Image (cartoon, rainbow, N blue to C red; front, top):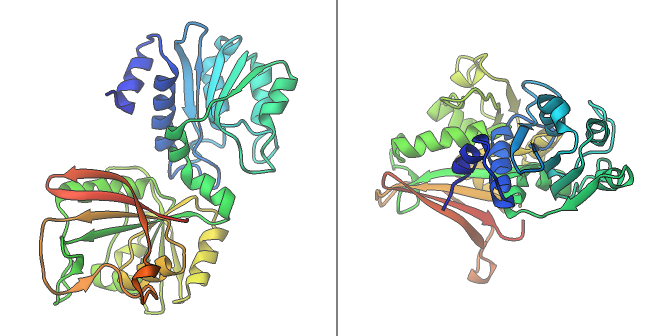
Length: 347
């Protein structure tokens, strides 16, 4: 089975492709845009010749330019875009915001056909497909589970009004995140910790509680990545300005409150698409119980402690019938640790 990276190499080699290859290529570009596009979606676009060869591609990266993915690809393609097919992960926008509408650039470039994976749920930006059709361009809506999942954070925000919240947990086999004496570094292994760096890089912000800031003194800068997610500390305890989280390598926001609504309002106001929660049991469980955790990524180490702090605390559940159900999305083995990615059902 080919991976997205395989598809990327094949397309770059100029070979004939099919839609599965194009989907995988766009997926890889959407993932590269994660953490770089907010408040906009992590859109990817690719332009193909009539013979199915890649002409140019691009993704939305606000750390480099305000240009949307379609415009990035069109600028690379130049005159070669005339008569070509544009694949885009999200319906091209029809409104003027920071930039002019993408549909105008597509029409002007002479694109003959547009295939898009997801209809824009934002009523302000939707309608691009119709305008392209009105201009005589062939338009096809071709749904893609790969691209749905790759762009789920922004879609979630567009639908619910708040960012996708992912709680990352490193735990022992018996669900402990710290021993009885409070020690917690390191429960997971080196490969798991490296994987967390990618999760951080793909997030617009990382949330921790003041207790985690005081006990662990984390830096939260993704190692090996250029991304600099905003660091958010929530709680009433005072964290010394000398702690690593206050250095100048990234912006830090302090929410001096234990109130979940106060924290969520800050995250909404900032326009974050995806937020990684690296908080301990108190804040993490409060967010989960209040309906503000959408996914969990659990790194489970093959270790037993028997006693200590468990990763989840009170959820307000007193009877089995009220259990919180999770949907398993994927499982990966990381040098003995097990990484399990879950979606909270109903969110």
